[in-house]
View 1 (cartoon, rainbow, N blue to C red):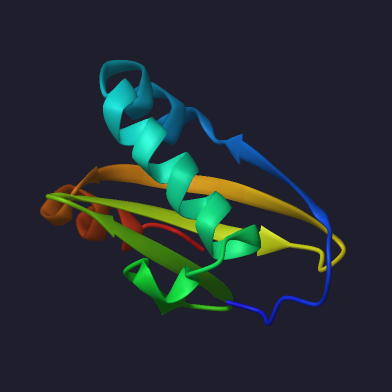
View 2 (spheres, rainbow, N blue to C red; view 1 turned 180 degrees about the horizontal axis):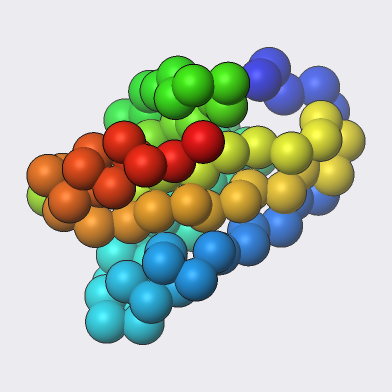
Length: 101
């Protein structure tokens, strides 16, 4: 995660695959959005289980939420757009990542 430099705004966007998962798992969406908020503007971002994943030329991050993984990327450093790429169980997410650019 980039270091936080003062107040800024952020937006969470969902690609179709992630949005489809979250429609059936609203509780995980809520956990994910809370985790993103804590990472970007919270007092204790170190409490969130996040790791950087390198897939080909793109840099992705994953957040671990119970038995699920959510993969996202960040765009811009002033107004951060969190582009949510995938969400699902651990095995499903990593299988799907093999096809990502």
